[in-house]
Image 1 (tube, rainbow, N blue to C red):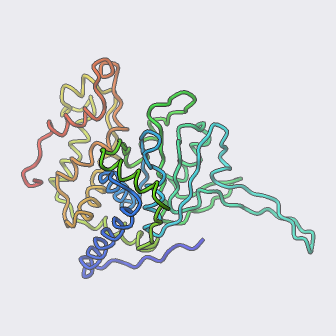
Image 2 (tube, rainbow, N blue to C red):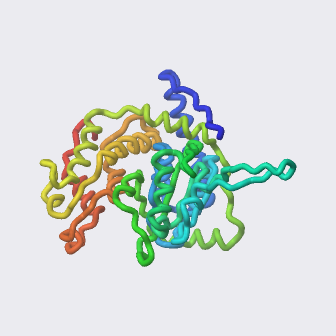
Image 3 (cartoon, rainbow, N blue to C red):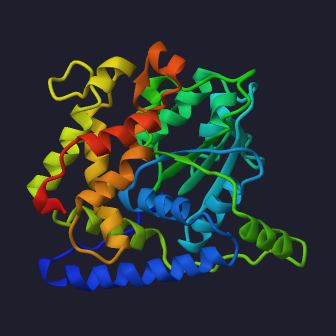
Length: 343
């Protein structure tokens, strides 16, 4: 395995790297727009995930171009892409790879050889991840958490950058194995894809029925993506904004003194510390993508729904009153005071 060489970032050339990243962003979006119509927010969130170095869950109905979106962005970034269709009979070895016996035809000597599975790619699309049993899900989740897979007691490192973008269908629950909350917590975002508007849908129909789809041209590569990930972590954030992110997270926990009454009424368990980490990191990436060199409270507020919606566990009172995690987050953003310095 060849690990891309990433140069060190000096204080003197941070601004130069930021300008380069922003020019790449424009080039990537141009390539994506050649294939993908609409879904501006979704595309931006996926780019944030790639800059942070996390993984994301994509929830949406069939036929909304989830697979095409991920494949297109991977192609524009110059990253290798593999798709795994999760089914009830999928086994862990179908994801990680397995050892086989290989015989040298000249000497007759036999030896074990590892054959890598589809997880050995930069971008892995786990299609309908909730359709496979927990044992198989755990094989992918180990790769997400550790950046490696273990086969027959031997560990194999995955080549960075490594991203998992998992999809799930929100309407078909029969025959599925929902991800446990502890595993959901490993996903940076839960991105919800909705229908296009009429004009965008008309454009999709005209584009896809009039000729061949245009393939994206790579505008960057794995080494540069890793450089941009390091660069994002160097973006400054005011203590008041970091504290605001922490207070927003702590307000989701019913047992915390600052939790609003509606949280105590509707929430069983709030979000973890990981949510606060992701709010800050993703906030830095969002700021960079918008050509800003500092994180604002607006960044934190905009990223709160995709980061928190799959981490907030509501109770039966919420279900009976029709209160969703998204509604909880909306109320929290309105209830938690915003520091003046973060405006």
